Image 1 (cartoon, rainbow, N blue to C red):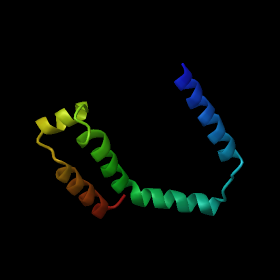
Image 2: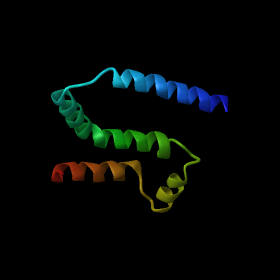
Image 3: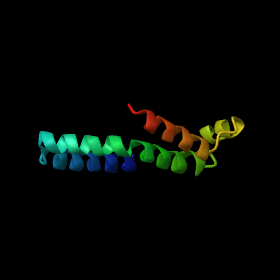
Length: 85
């Protein structure tokens, strides 16, 4: 209960800061372009932390059963980048 209350207070504090810090269209576009460029690396980093780096992950067991390594996924992501959106 206390943990949830603290989480909500953090959310409210962050929301206030967010609403008081508007950005321009050009800034928003630049942020979006950067995030799109970084999405593959972010996905692979999340996969490492949440799946391959987490022995309790149910996805890890599925990927091991399929004999799918991090390298396989990284190679697939690289092929997808070369083809483009």
